[in-house]
Length: 146
Image (cartoon, rainbow, N blue to C red; front, top):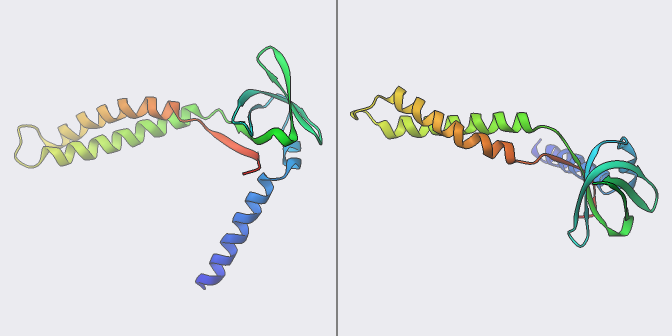
């Protein structure tokens, strides 16, 4: 049974990678979506998608329209606006880690109770985790030559 599951997993993974390496996958983008184009020389461009042709991708960057030729494109990523979700995840993970550390550090004979230590360290962990979660970028790769 395990070999069958392994073969299925590999076929799904290769199908997903194949979709990312096809230039035609850019046809699924809608005008106005926020994208990031990374060139083969590692130059990054962030802007608003306008259109794609067989030879280039066209987007609005800053105040001007920009075009990058297909052979120069390493990848195109769709920017998702999930900062609130990432912020909440960061806060939650930080709070859980802090509470766990606080409960373990308090021990059983200290001058501070376990619940109080867990709460205090959980709060500190949430304060530390919130900006970390906020700074985590969320991009979905639409096209990649990697």
